Image 1 (cartoon, rainbow, N blue to C red):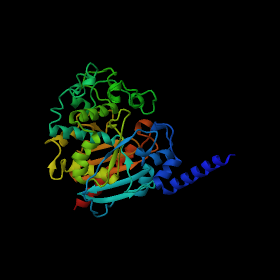
Image 2 (image 1 turned 180 degrees about the vertical axis):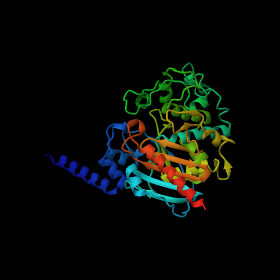
Image 3 (image 1 turned 45 degrees about the vertical axis):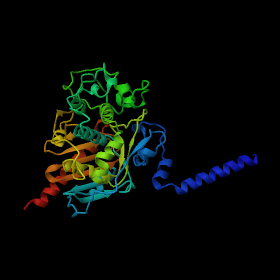
Image 4 (image 1 turned 60 degrees about the vertical axis):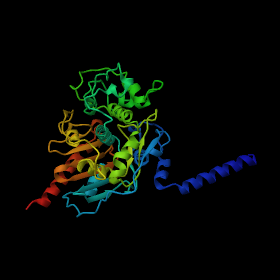
Length: 399
């Protein structure tokens, strides 16, 4: 072998060794478990463990944009330990929980971590991002950039004119009652949710808009609920179009900085450079809990209202039935009959908010199955856990 080839091999080996030595533990885990398929549903449990904490550092995934935090951090003081009549460690193991943060009356009552994750890390949100995206609609209404949620979507996204969305209102997007036909089956490689992110966009058109405008209606707008991640992506495009700002910058400006999130977050981008607004914010679990506190506190940040009067009550009340007997649906929030509501993402991401008990539960994880639709029972067990937390708080106030 020629000496120069040997020298190159030696230099590459030294460089790789130096990189490995300097890489943090999350990057090392990622390098050892790097997936080659962009579809998360086909990753192994080990690959998901590695990638969910580093989605914005995976070369095969899209780029990301920073959601900048400010200089001041909203405090999360430690409160009295919550007396739970169940084995928290066993619950977390069964859920494959990476983080569990319970805040009540503004104080941390319980904080636990698993899967070698910790408070300094950032975990992906999956569809929890939907509830943040819908909140930005409220902010744009407050700012006057959106006149009314009774406006049609095509008023703000002209490229949708002439499509099935031409007469769909913003309200119908928010409640996922557009009547446009959509398949959200995560296990079906030919479903819309599997195809639309990989869609080759028409020239000069956002990739989501390009895909969604080819769909057909199956019911009159406002008459049929179907869960559609693509429609939340449209909501994000609409907000950016109305405000003239990227979603990441707008979220940073309206909530992340003024409310006092502790860490910068990030938001994955689609192929045409827009945030994938139905998914994929990377943030610390504590900051997901802080977002819950922002909502619980009426949408106030730095002493100023970010949202219109009555927006949170309207957004988090049942606007339509769903395909689940346990949940209704508001403006991209899942609602419960007792007044509690939640943001939910596949594989165990969630923010549970109970105004009556001044309670926020933020959790991240890596369930064995994406959701109940794939045969897992983790969602049902997590809801039962939320009920146990409510009971524990009620016992404290009982005579």
